[in-house]
Image (tube, rainbow, N blue to C red; front, side, top):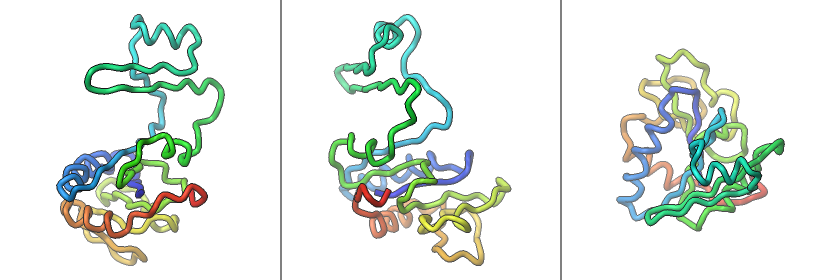
Length: 168
């Protein structure tokens, strides 16, 4: 598994959606986990599944011909640890984790100097490379060209770590 981290608006999702086809062309099966800082809802008021949740169901599974989704209500409980979320996924070759920059897993930081933010890589020992749209100096990790998705895919495959629950 490998993480893609960075400040809001840096292009994490854009990079991941470009990486997925590049990895797929290499025969790699991939699942993703994305951290959302704000609450979200896949459901709509008035729909049966929404009514199930509102009535107190702890989990509601939606099933259609082409996909299924499981919604789990946390209530007042904190979100589960990342290792518990990864364990819920079906086995794949690679899990790409968007966000979760405070968890202990190797990650690539997406960084655009034009955004005016500080580099996470300067303070995080888990960032193993920075993907940037501009040259960067004085970094202890490799700098990857954000626009060279094929090279980033090669780097991901070379540096992704096996899933080890105790490392997270």
